[in-house]
Image (cartoon, rainbow, N blue to C red):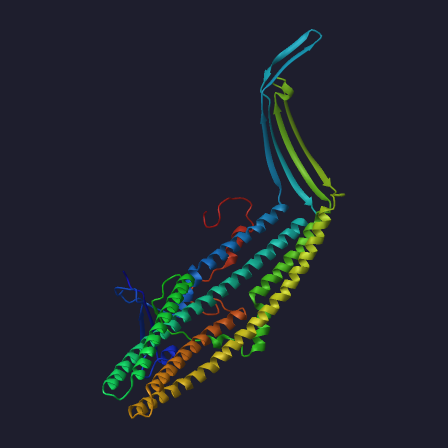
Amino acid sequence: MAIRRIETVATADSAPLARALNGRITPLSRVAVVLATNLAVAPPATAETMSSALVRAYIGNPDMNQQRAGVRAQDENIPRATSGWRPQASATGQVGYNYQDFRQLGTRLNGSTLPTTIGLSVTQNVFNGNRTLNSVRQAESGVFGAREDLRNTEQNVLQNGATAYMNVLRDTAVLELRRNNITVLEEQLRQTRDRFNVGEVTRTDVAQAESSLANSRSEYFVAQANLQNSIANFRQIIGVEPTRLEPARTIEALLPKNMNSAVALALEEHPAIQAVLHAVDQAELQVKLVEGELAPSVNIVGSVQRATDYQGIRNASLVNGQVVGQISVPIYMGGEVYARVRQAKETLAQTRLQADLQRDSVRATVVSAYGQLDSSKAVIQSAKAAVKAAEIALDGIREEAKVGQRTTFDVLFAQQTLLNTRVSLVTAQRDRVVASYNVMAAIGKLSAANLSLNVAEYDPTVHFEQVKDKWIGLRTPDGR
């Protein structure tokens, strides 16, 4: 049974999580967390970076790929709509058996024939209340909206991928902190028992040390479960198991200089807003489409027909060709079309309100994401100071305990305080990186191009150009 090995490699300029673990606990120049259920050691894998993980998500995430397929399906609405400008042709055929017995004034004709008829009809629409034109425009808006939905999906996948990556790093570091804390408390318990044996402390001190150790072990198992959950989420989003994850940096350099600029940019370019604006265009065109059903429809119909054994007469044939103009004027259809016009207008009003709602939602998301980013920066500074102070306090309390000025409880409490501050620092450093990606997504700019990912970008216009003018064919451009 192969082991699953998670490592974070700290470097001099990109190890914020690692620095949380220095001091008395083993430095995290290389943190290796081995899950308890594994039995054998696997060979080391190539280090995974944030960029390489996001590339994997961009290429292989099922949500991304299904959305791309949805855009390609939406492209086909263009040739469907433009078919209204093209002629429609149909062929008919008929064959049967005919027997007749004709008598008149002593004359009798009888016998059987096999009459056949073949025909071809071609219909070209000339005018239909601009329904074809509006259908094409509506299909184009649908394609543009689908592309914006794809951009939004790309943002969500990359944002979730970055979050999953940082969660694994955080939970790996926290698990290592918990494990090292167990080692420290085990040593503390051993020393307390030795002092109890020589009468320096009481049984109460031993019980306190035992209680702290047991609690630390339970926290370790919780941290292990959290890491396993983060690994599962990483696998779901990125597509592979995390192996050796390198520390990641924030992308604050890519963000606007202030929140007001970010809000203005988001309202202008966020794909969710652009998608709903295209939906408004579609709703407006839907009103025109239904209104077009009340307009006259003009067609030119050409047909040709050839019949043999015409009307049951042996060897009689008929060839008939004609070109006619047809006009259809709707007068009254029970009010059904009028109801759909009114319905389409209400849907249009609803879609416009949804656009306003989406703008408010994007604005709130940007403000919230910026607040989280600023908060994480402040928390990091406070946590660093707290870790430094807690380390000094623990060292002092340990020295005072040696001369009887502090109790075992004081030492254990100081140890727990230091652990908590280190965990808080690790969490805050994770939060800062994640918050920077959240802000980038909130303004609508989190994409493979803006992150400079080393990947061939998916171009939805390629398939669009391949199918928009197709008149015939069952196979998709990829050969299916």
